[in-house]
Image (cartoon, rainbow, N blue to C red; front, side, top):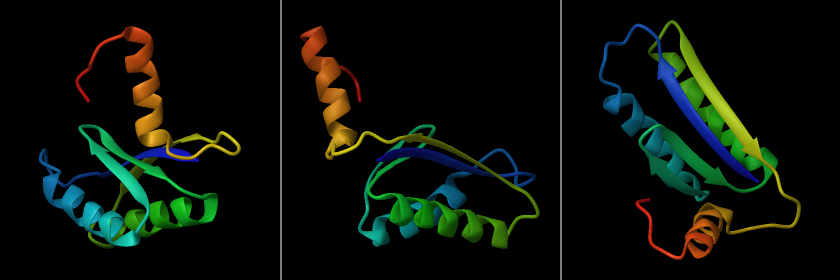
Length: 101
C-alpha cells in the first residue's frame, strides 16, 4: 500500500523544517520505501509497518508539542508493489514526456 502523510505541530511557528527533519530521520532509518515531497512524505509497505511508522513519527512530534495534526491518505492496491515510482512513470508514459517530480 502507498500512504501519503504529513504531520503539523500546532503553535510552533511558521517554519516546520526542524520537525520535518526529525520525522525524516525516523522514516529514513525505518527501512520502509519513502519519498519526501513539498507537502508531506509518501511511504510504501505493508499496513502494520507503514501505519506503525506514521504513529511513531506522530508521537515524536507530539512529545514536543501540545497539539499535532496528522493527515494520512491511503491507496491500497492488492498485489502491487513499486508504486511510488510506478504511478508517476505511468502518467509520464501516457503523456509522452518528462514531468517535474
